[in-house]
Length: 202
Image 1 (cartoon, rainbow, N blue to C red):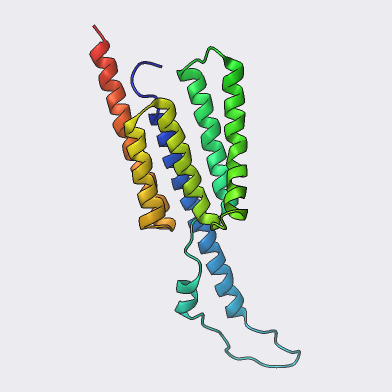
Image 2 (tube, rainbow, N blue to C red):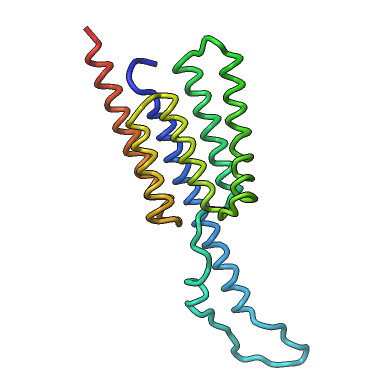
């Protein structure tokens, strides 16, 4: 796969996965709002023989503003992180070509199993919100990637990701903003990879 940093792929994969997650969440919220509006406009049932000329109910704007703004729900994050872990394992299987295939497969399976187990521990033991556990698990995965690659760049990316997705904006905006951070880091790493490969070419 060439020289240079290989971690650009999991960073980009997680970034694009978060964008897809945010798009699904926005579509679900829009569909739920339209359904609630339709139910209110229908109004109560009209008895037989009664005449209703005009009757409609308006939904207060405060209802929409008071509706949850949280991150995508836990199961959606679990599926997203599972796809990212599986994709990362396949990528490193081709990029790194591990000599000890058995250990590599066991490590990949353990990482996949760790995602729901850590999510369960965060829910039961620490009482963390459904939407907050996803970014925290993603941050933990980035830290593991930084330790595996021994990369300060990935470590700084993980810190920036946690700052944006958890501390500054723990909502849907934080998902999109942290995805931009990941994609920018992946693009930077990919440019470094191409530069290193070109410098090694005689």
